[in-house]
Picture (spheres, rainbow, N blue to C red):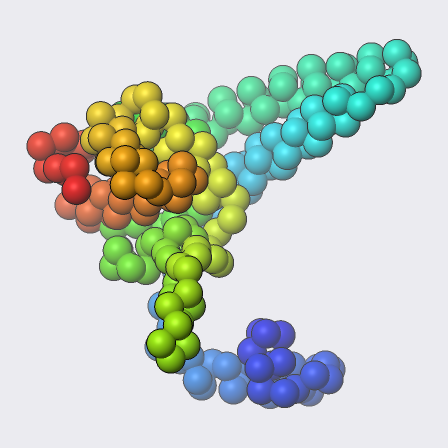
Length: 236
C-alpha cells in the first residue's frame, strides 16, 4: 500500500490518507486474485517459517564461528547449535505430521514428492506458501516464486533479463531443492541443466532456469492431479 501511495506522490501518512489510499487501491485493482483464508494452511506456514528462522539463526552462528573467539564463546555457540538442531528436527516432525493429518495437504504432498529430488519439507513449504499451484497460469506461478525473468529494454537497447520479486523464503528453499535435483537426483532436470551449461549459461542462471521449468511442471501436475512421469517432460 505504501508503494502504491508513493507512486501517486502521496508521501504523507495518517489514518485519513491511509483510508483514502486503501479505497483507491481497491478500486484500481478490484479484480486482483486473492486467496480465501485457510486456517490450516496458515498454521502450516507459521511452522515452516519458524523452521526457516531457526535455519537462518544457525547460518548466522556458523558465520560467527569462522572468526576467532574465546573458548567460552565457542562452547556457548556449540550449545546453541545443538539446541537449534534439536528444535529444527522437532519442527520438521510437526510439519510432516500436520501434512499427513490433513487429507488435502497429503494429496498435494504425494504429487510433489513424486518428483525426484523433492522431499517432505520442500513439499510442505510449497503447500504452505504457494496455494496458487494448480490454480493459476504458469506465468503467474513463476512470478510468485520469483523466477520469472523481466525485460529491461529501452528503444534499441536490450538489457539483461533479471528475476525479481516473488516469495523470497520459498524461492531460497526451492533453489536448494533444485540444486540437488538438477545435479544428482532428477534425470530430466539434470539433462536440462547440463544443456544450459553447454550453451554457456552461468551455473546460477542455468539453475534458475531449472527452477522455472520445475515449478511449471509442478503447476501442471497439481492441476491434473498427476504424479511425476519422466515421459511427460522431455528435455528442451
